[in-house]
View 1 (spheres, rainbow, N blue to C red):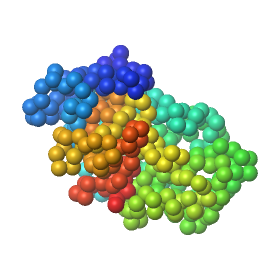
View 2: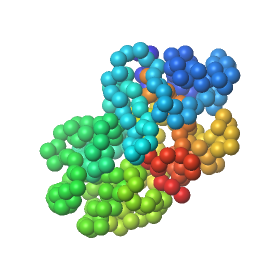
View 3: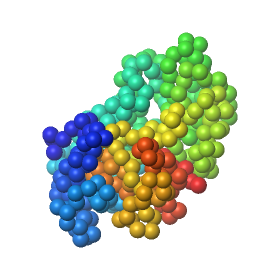
Length: 324
């Protein structure tokens, strides 16, 4: 499907774009095709986004989800704890991922070259196949800034760098996994005026899970900032949403969240009702763009959404999750 350009998606043409991708993947993604067949759904009868079936995310642990016969360029792996099976995302064209996160960053934060990018992602750095590390490493490189870089457990160096950036009033973004950010503010208190602090969720078994309000309250106090930002992405997707100063998650134009009934996975719920999060990610054209996640959330009238937690019986793993 080389002619499809997800970056040309707008609110007006989203449905048309999504149906085009659905018709393609329903034929070319064998696992998705079989899934639709088992549901006894006639592909030609799907004329509306709300009728598209969503593939349960668990399939990424047991099957190869591909819609393209091209060689696989990159394999992203989820951060399952020892003994858990990992999800794997077989990426046939990694440039689509790069376009997706660069364009989304630009939409929500502006030109990457205006920022110093600091990353505190120890649990991700210590394993292979992280899509988050791939993205952040590229953002660090694209920032073209000698001050950008990764930090592991060297908190003093990170503190010194943050203070240096503040003294220069340099626009800075600190991207960190939740437990590492909490570890940092136990040692250092900051008063950041020129830095965006973005948590990528997940305690990775290092601390007890916290609801977002509690986590963000602690981080705001420790870093001395008005708001904490957050990123909602996962191994199985090529796009992410951002929780920014609006204090709700915002999707780029080629991504959309729908909410399903937790009692009936094929039924969608109206705006404002809580249920399971279904994601449409049109950048994921070579895999599956229609995924039923194990997260719980709700969508608002303006298309923004919130993540409320996870299904009780689901694995705790590395997408942005906060148990309630």
